[in-house]
Every structure is written in structure tokens, then in C-alpha cells.
Amino acid sequence: MSREKTAFITGVTGQDGAYLAQLLLAKGYRVAGLVRRTSHDDRAMQRLEWLGISGDVELIDGDLGDLSSLTRACQRLQPAEIYNLAAQSFVATSWQQPLLTANATALGVVNMLETVRSVSPHSRFYQASSSEMYGLIQEPVQTEKTPFYPRSPYAVAKLYGHWITVNYRESFGLHASSGILFNHESPLRGIEFVTRKVTDGAARIKLGLAGELRLGNIDARRDWGHARDYVRAMWMMLQQDTADDYVIATGVTTTVRDMCGIAFKHLGLDMESHVVIDPAFYRPAEVDVLLGSPAKARAKLGWTPEISLQQLIVEMVDADMARLKSKSA
Image (tube, rainbow, N blue to C red; front, side, top):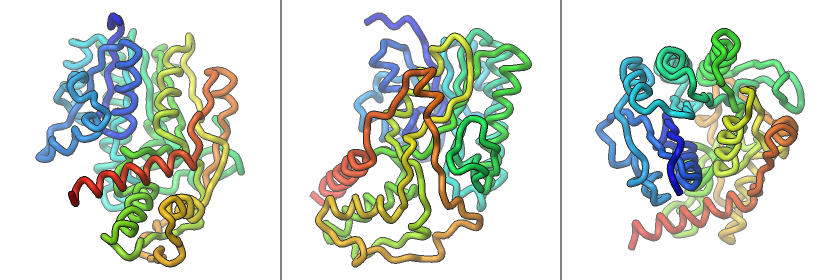
């Protein structure tokens, strides 16, 4: 298949960036990704390697905080599509590093938009917004019209990124869309996130590498989907004639407790015998429940999730079992 389009992905080494790169490569795109140089570059590549695409993605040195690097990249690539997925994306860290979070997750967005406006105005732009922006929910089911009430420095930063994208779309006529993505997970999810913490913890207990799993508020409810489904929605947004904002969610909410139950049951373990509630893992300002309505995405994009929570958690548990066994072999 000839590669007619170039896509530029920030955050290409993250969970969503890796799955999106895989999807776009399969569709015949030339895929380039922004990479921030660190002392752990080998670890950063693990997700692309796990998907078997590390050699197919063109990596470009740069940083969301360095406008010059973004400008040079877009001048050279002239991408048809730009996906801004990079951020400081762990909510708990945002209370400890609020300025870093603001610089990367908020100001990084306007740096990207300024780059598009200045050197690549024909590019279609995707901004990764977050359901965390709803925070202290103002409606039981969140839609594109639900008022936001962010409850963490991360969510506040994401809200700036969301509204500045709307502003540049309306002010400068950019084809700039935002996906308000609810929780989406996969075997590529970072170990610090609760779903991966649970699946890795259950696997460790099954293999005799641990005896307990310490968690915080396991009665918090979330709307969980699979990252593979959600990156497909990102691509679909940029194929539309008109840019817009979309909630991407399953429309089903599940407690952390019930999600744990799926993971432990899959391994034949009794969750109650191993999970320990630790107040140290509670957030300073808790988000108790998030539940999104994908009705607009279904009606306008034709998008529906294809992978159930049960399938997602089983896939994650099996992947963590395989990882841990390979390390101990």
C-alpha cells in the first residue's frame, strides 16, 4: 500500500501513541513521532517494540515546551494529520508536580496549535482531552455539553488544552478536534495506573511474587474501554469534513472493586484475601464516578467500542503473567 499521508504523533511512545501508530501504519500512513530525549530512551521504546512497529515509526527529537523543535518538525513533515497525545498524564503526580503538569499538559497544547497555525495550517489537529475535566460531576451521564469541574492539577491543565483547541478552531479556522476520552486501558498501560496495578498485582500474587495488593478507593466508579478502540475514534474524528469535539466512552460504569474481581477471578484467586485498602493511595480531591455518553460519536462518526471490560482485563492479566514469567525464566 502506498503511503500517501503523513501523520505526526506527539506522545508516540505512550500507550495511545503506540496503538495509534500501529493503526495508521496499517492504513498506509507514513508515521512520525515526537520523542523527548531522556536518560531512559530504551524504556521509552518498549511499547512500540511490543507492537512490533519500532522500526516503522520515524522518531523526531523535540519537546512540547520547545516551540522551535515543533516548528522544525512540522515544516519538514507537512503532516496531513497531527495527534497531540503527549502530556504529564498521571493524575496523582499532578499534585506533586503541578507546574510541570501545567507546562506539558496545558501550555504544550498551545505550542502545538501555534505551530499548526504558523507553518502547517492545512494539517488536521487532534487534541487528547480527558474525562477528568468533568471531575465533580454536574450531570449523572457526561456529554459534550456537560459543564466541567476539574478536581486535580492534571484536569485543570487538560481543561486549558481543551478550550484553547476550541478557541483556535473558532478564531483561526483550524481543523482542530478534541476527543474527551474516558478511561481507556491496555497491556501497554503504565504500571502506576490502577488497572495495570491491579492486573500486575494479581499476576504477582498468582506467581508467588507478592502476597497482597494495596489500593486506595476501590469504590470509585469509572467508564473503562480499550485503548485500541479509542485510538480508532481519534482517527475517525480527523476524517470528518468539519472539526468538532466528541466524548469517547463505553456508556458503562464499573467500580475498581468489580474490576479487581475480574482480574483475580481469571487467575482463580480470592480478591478479598489479597487486596488491602491503604489510605495513602486516596487522592486529595477524589473523583467518585465518571460515566460518558458515546451517543454523538456513534451518530456522527459511526464509532462504537468493540472490546468489553471483561476482555480487556483478561488480556491485561495474561500479558502481565507472560511478562513476569519471562523475567523469571
